Image 1 (tube, helix red, strand yellow):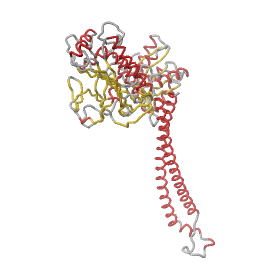
Image 2 (cartoon, one colour; image 1 turned 30 degrees about the vertical axis):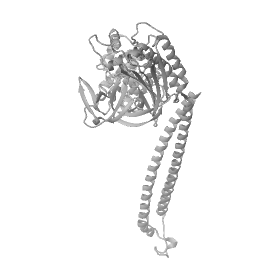
Image 3 (cartoon, rainbow, N blue to C red; image 1 turned 90 degrees about the horizontal axis):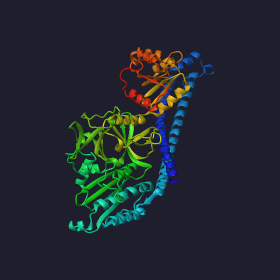
Image 4 (cartoon, rainbow, N blue to C red; image 1 turned 60 degrees about the horizontal axis):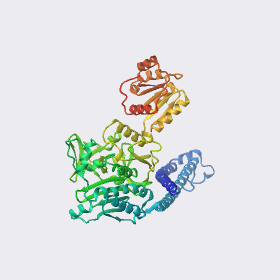
Length: 600
């Protein structure tokens, strides 16, 4: 019930944001209207003055009738032009008064909307408070795990919990219980030495394990540290070579060793036991932490112990985001992963070993254009001298620098999951609705492959298509005389993030192309008035549409039909029934301009 209430309040806050944006636009239009009416009133006054100056001859020419005995200075005399001018002036004045009254009412509504939004936030905070539980509620389980592991291994250790009074989201705490139990077992089994070895190393017989919780702004910091021996780098390196993680002659540094520990299925134990993960490596812990939007970092000091630091969001339903613009699209980056926002001239961009790096404050890290990772044409360039906004972020693989076009704002936002509608879409951690109604994709850089592999390009293209505003999304024209076929293809194209446009035959398609050229044309072979072959031949004969990607979808599969389609210039020939995924990839290639040549 609390989850449902929180979802409803989140939707309400989004609606408040939409209403406030539209109301602000209405206030701006009201100001413009008042300015125009003021200018109109001045014009009417000038017109009224001209009527007074120039209408007197018309009065004299027309005769003054019963006022013939009076001089013009003794009695004001008017004609219909005077009356019409005065009526226009009064109407302009009335319109301006109405505009002023409308503006005051809009300002009153704006104040009321702010109060409602404030009340909505208070309700949201109250519901969030109902979800909060103290960390200390799970202390007994953690203490029991340490005692049981000590008993099973013959070691001595004490667990100290700091920050147990901190209240965090119940879902986050529940998701943390098992990973922390795993880390505690590892701390005792792998980290804490036996009492004899500790005495020889001038350490107390009883090892110390510290579990600390604290809040840092909108983040929850969890650190589990012990005073054991730290990571056994030699054993880890040897095991990594067996698993082909390192070449045989490679001497890994400390960072590579720590990264190897987090590899999938990595464990230095040859036998499955009931302690220290029971044959399961730290990758399970990292996966569990990443699932709730957190990060994991290791710091080992040989002979002195190991520290595992987790950085977690304050809530799973809303999170603090940095909104950035890349080209025409807007994306959101989790503030949880952001270290610093600066301009590119604060450091130096260099090329080392064919890789671009950003050198800043004595450190260096890989630098990427976010537009390149997402397959967008962004404005920022790595080679320009002009300073560009740059975001330093940390991932589980290390620190990276992202060059963006513009920083829009940073604020708390309700994040919706995309995996229900787009299962398997990596790199998109969710989506949030902006104040103007557009959707911003929340990027999860831990899932974005920085290597330019075909899979990462497909994922990046898919994410960028989802984030593109409606007016900027690629247009796909569907020409088919079958209503069911048009509806089916239009629904599929809309789900892919494109803008579908339909036509009933070749002539209708040609008219729509002349009105607004599409990015891709899907057409049937057999249509009334103008069939697909005739339409394609006509388009190829015109310079402005000669390169338009044309995908023909038909039930005709003979070699004769394919040859004719190839002759007139059809880009791709698809026979029914077709696979939706294949057609989606074909559309993506067509939009990206990768349908080179003409192939039927």
